[in-house]
Amino acid sequence: IVYLGNEKYVLPVVFVEIISRMKNVKESQIIQESENEFTVRIVKTSGYTEDDTKMLVSLMRNIVGNNTRINVEFEEKIYDVNKKYRFVISRVKPF
Image (cartoon, rainbow, N blue to C red; front, side, top):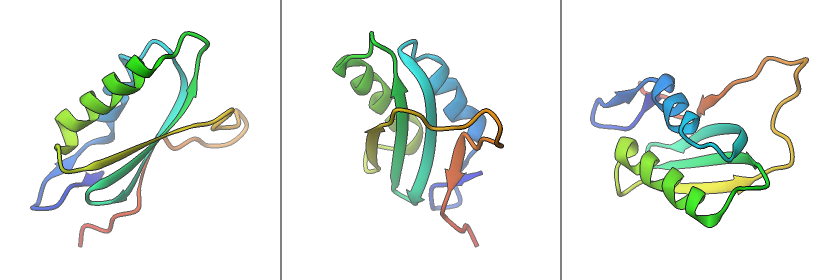
């Protein structure tokens, strides 16, 4: 579960829905670094453009708020098919 402060929580499935709208994303992972900072790791397809990044950030802001920093990092590969994969990682302890 992602904790955004002020007793506001977001279920990981919300982020799965956001990424599922992104047709030019091959693999992805979202990491909550702090209550107001996220890193989105992306493996992009050949059709990926800057507009895709803008749309991703806009969709994320609708959920996490405008004052949240969203970093987008591009990777060659994120996960190995032989290992368990965590789509959303939160480094925030809500208690």
